[in-house]
Length: 154
Image (cartoon, rainbow, N blue to C red; front, side):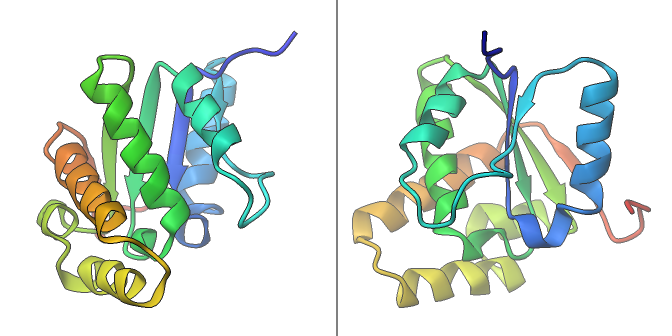
């Protein structure tokens, strides 16, 4: 019997996988909280499986970091999460890991530079970019958690 995840974790791996995320996962495991991370997913694989996991979840954590918008995968997951949240089928909690809320909301600073670089250099449509921007604004307007440079996280 497969247990459905309670929490879907949306993140860009290289910046947080072995620091903040490893601590979060350990805490979830200690407290018996079921969660899903795309640890074993192949890059470039169809997102259908991940979208199914998002849909099965009650809560999604969107962990924004400076390089988060380098990933179409992350942004597409976020757009799906926004859609489900608007239908009251998912609660999204944003975590701003060493990035400013306004930089995420308005795609500026280093976060914005990575976002616009992806938009220019990848095979994306104007509609896809619009969905990403709307999802970033929607989620960054929610009450969340900010982890700044001044906090110890490793």
